[in-house]
Image (cartoon, rainbow over all chains, first blue to last red; front, top):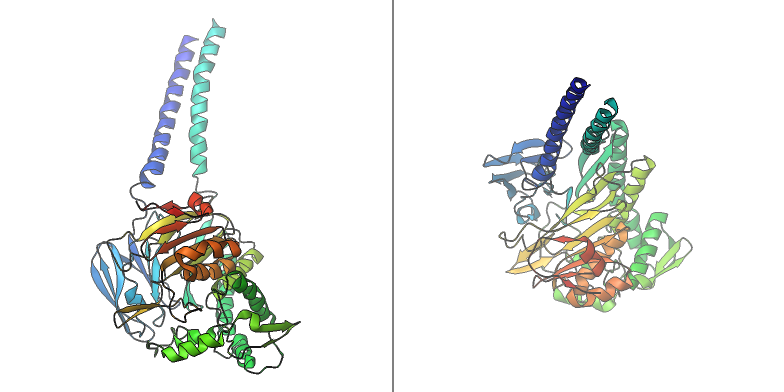
Length: 132
Length: 363
């Protein structure tokens, strides 16, 4: 009986250990990933008209030159942020808009039919209100 | 003693079992199995950038709904444009005669709904000032040859004197006329909200109960994002001018069927001879409204939220609580041009602010 008891007790140990591991992993993902890493933008999506968006890493500083519907566009990626720095459009709202820095944020040059949006693996927001 | 061992065994096991169930429960809550897939699509329509997110496990159905929404936005944009040859354009032309004429059901509904809201807002939300909006050329923003010019002050004054109001429109069954020939309807501060309501109806027809439609930062949600409330960040209006300011001033989680609309002076504007001219025109003065940086309104009715965000922006830091009461809007945040944050009590309970500045809560 004692032997059987010992064997069962060892199985219980294993169950507890296993359960503790899973619990730790769950708590880690809940409290770590939803904490300090939240909302960090990692990727810039650039879409022209109805085409599928092109992806650019925000880790690499660069300037993208693109052709829109009415002319050229320059987009700057710098230190994890992105913005329009030149557009052939008249009203220049896209350039006035300034930096996008938060995952979920987006803006567009409507006359050129080009939009830029930021994405992150874990995003703080599903949308940004008042973004245009 | 076998009995004693069994009791001890059960004691240990009951703790282990409880613990195991707890772990399984947490794991089950986060299981990917029950999670619906997220479909996202961006559209250039309605003079803005539209983002549609749908949670659904039927990709064809989601795509069909998005296609329907896309063509509906396009068609409403033409129908509701004040100067194009659609139904609103025709209606506006007919107002110059003083006779009754027929208009479409969709335009009659816009007129009815917005007349009530215009009265409630003491005329601060006034879709009858289409000619004034045209003077500022804010209806021309999509035109690639557009260039900002300051309107002639005399022309502004002349239009203010003519005082076009929604109540000048007389309705008789499906027939309408205007008793004031200066009435030209421009639903720029209402159409987006009214259109979003129609898009939500399309989603419901497809039995889609979890979605977000975001039209250039004005949005409405259905259901949740896989059990989590849709969480919205609100842009800090001071960030555009001062990049050292945080980009997001606040966050709010939306419940099923709630819309969030923001009017901001940073959205569409021009700098001309050192002055800032934005697109929200005060119908009392004929010039861009002063005193407010942004207003955010939450309501279950997107059209009301749209009209109210404009009316409260124009009302400014002193008058907004009265107008909000009249328009029956409960959830309001207003940021004034001296960077003070004003909240309605209901909004104060739900919003999460990311600033040290103490908000002013006005009942």
